Image (cartoon, rainbow, N blue to C red; front, side, top):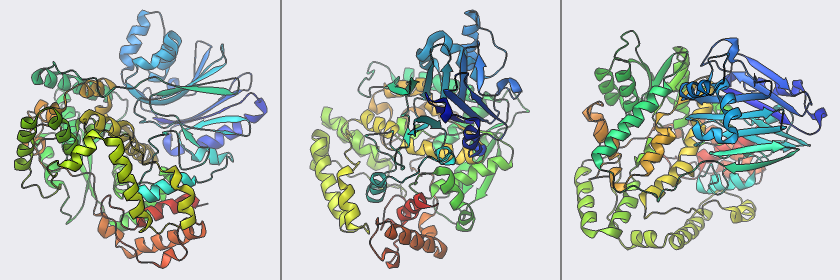
Amino acid sequence: MCGIAGILSENPNLINKENLIRMTDSIIHRGPDGSGHWISEDGKVGFGHRRLSILDLSESGAQPMHYMGRYTLTFNGEIYNYLEIKADLIKKGYSFRSNSDTEVLLALYDHKKESCLEDLDGMFAFSLYDNKTGEVFCARDRFGEKPFFYTQFQGAFYFASEMKEFSAVGVDRIPDPEMIFNYLHYDLVDNHADPTQTFYKGYKKLAPGHYLIWKNAGFIIKKYWGLNPKNQNNSIGIDEAKDKFRTLFYESVNRRLRSDVLVGSSLSGGIDSSLVVCVIDNLLKNHPDSIQNTFSARFKDFYKDEGYFIQKVRESTRINSHELYSNMEDLENVFDKICYHQEEPFGSASILVQYQVYELAKKHGVTVLLDGQGADEILAGYHPYFSTYFNEIRKHSESKFKREYAAYMKLHEGNSINAKISKPGWKQSMASNFPDLVSKVGRGILSYKMKNTSLMAKDFFEENKKHAHNNFKLDVGHLNSHLHFSTFSIGLPTLLRYADRNSMAHSREVRLPFLSHDLVEFVFSLPSDYKIKEGWTKYLMRAAFEDLVPQEISWRKDKIGFEPPQKSWMDNIKTQEKIRAAREILSKEGILQKGAENLPIQSQVAHIKGDGSWNHLMVSKLYDT
């Protein structure tokens, strides 16, 4: 895992080593083990790199890396199936001087050019220069686990792992009022209609599953991967599906254990992270000296603390468990650091605790962590998916709908954590059959309500309301389509950003077994009732691994996100002082009403906006000098 930087221009005078060093110096946290800088012979291409050594710890793995006297690469990420690719390339006559996945990527590109992306199981963002064609080929992984930012400034094209690299060389950093409006008004931190947009004008993201080719001062962007949620295999049986899911998941975990440094896991107590931990433990059973380290966050005297379930995993495996008890006092000390590393606003206080978990891993010398992120989005883990599932099956069979809804109500009658899903009525039917119309009406009502309760300045609201990002194309009558939206539009992309910046702030690497594209493609091909069945979310996964994960976890009814006691933290006097100071900044910028800092502060609970206090605090950070 690393950090990358680059400057491309037809004018060699705009590219110099000093600027590349400034860019990489600003992201030392992403790669504390070394740095490298290189400029092409014609002076038109400059690459920078910060190294976090994971595979091949020798100097042979240093970057920017050169190959065949033709190619130069700066690469951030991991190619998990590099050994299989390498073996195939050796048969084709390629040779290697290192044991790194970076060199394998270079050889694969020589062999297949941009089609090489089809072969990669990994998370990555990279830029590769071909001195024969003069092209620079840049790409980002299918789900966007690794970041790739770019901007154009005074005749040059810049790319980076983090936007602070642009600021380091003097590229203007101006907050985007359109993004600020949508964050304050709708709690949106991404624009689903334009995934390239960031909170700063002119700073862009390369969208997941896309590549970019730069040549002669211009560039093109193309999509190389995607999936159609409507393509389903209705002929596969449940037993066959369970076997294949199990095989694919074991393969994914096994590949993500490849490392020349210590590997551990995040453990929340939920089924996703518990499954990852249990599978790793099973894979290590023939290696008695290899004991897995796990890292967990606890919340003292909080009813959503998951210590009971963490203990159940501990009792059934050979893990070395590390826990931290998070509190508001601890978080006061790291809040500004997190804002610095995240660079853009975030949605809740859970991100603060995640930051501490990676810090704990660093203290114990574990560089790589496997995590269960992505399972909720691809396997329907969140309870609101029940509504979409009920809408879908009711279209085809009233009797099946009645059975499924009755089973759901019976199973969850004692669930005090998750709110019950109301029996679908005429509103749900309208939403399912006329999604665009209902969505338009709903947006209008919501906008009216929020306009009259928001502290937003009137002029700022009127100037930006036409740029609302809430025109969601969400099919609430088809579960797979809903999951696709969560995985690729609103939901998972945001969580991946949080995890990347928080982990790299401590020079840790996070690997996500549920985001093997082979596994995701398979899951999306399955019928909806393999994901939700008889009141159970993630039915396929529970059934496939019920022999491995403790029963109390594999068949848990409730769903607890990574949720700290946020309401009490928001009630903290020091937190409220920060919010008032933030409101004062935003009032001066013309974003909030005059005198907003003197108005009462309402606590925010989970994802409920309240008066937007949390959001005010986040947006003010965009204006920090």
